[in-house]
Length: 144
Image (cartoon, rainbow, N blue to C red; front, side, top):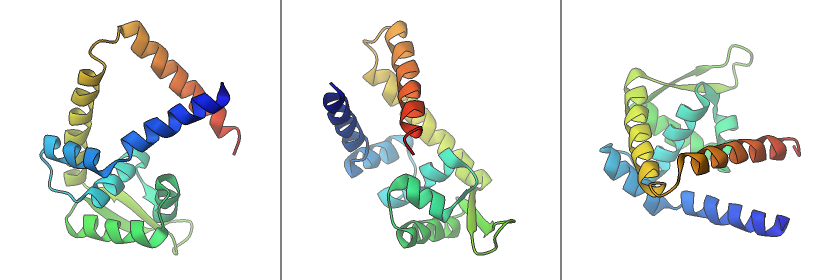
């Protein structure tokens, strides 16, 4: 059973990580971003105030790859970076006001897409899914 659960998780993560899905989200949200920059922006929005290293670890990407995308996002006015107050070698990234507006547009689009995908689910089914996903996350975190 545990192997089947793991396979289902791999299927889900693989589906969510497809670049064509990101491009569809970008188009539906009406934002002008490359797929790689989109993922980094969403990651910064999720972690809000994060280091390049933490973001790279969360995304499973190299430090230099994430750092390049952050540079592009900063040049476009979506994020700003500054040295960490605890270690000046660490670069911290946060959303700008414009970046927050873009994240809001993306989140609203994602919510609409999820509502469409789960349209035939009952509210109880959705509540159960949320409870079990949170429980699985907390359980898996204990393995670290």
